[in-house]
Image (spheres, rainbow, N blue to C red):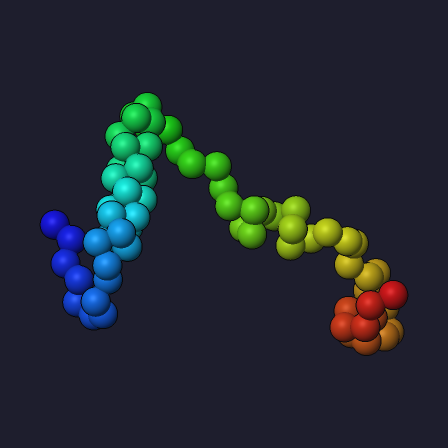
Length: 68
């Protein structure tokens, strides 16, 4: 059941929202059991470590902050 708690949507807006919810539910129902979604790009380890860290040394702390 969908309930509008704020605002006054038109019939078209309600129909569009319901279509999105039903399409998502159908996609989930059609997926094979145990199928995992691919990991999101933002959580990929390669995104976190795109370049090498500076070698340790006397002023390594300064090289970790400033690029180049």
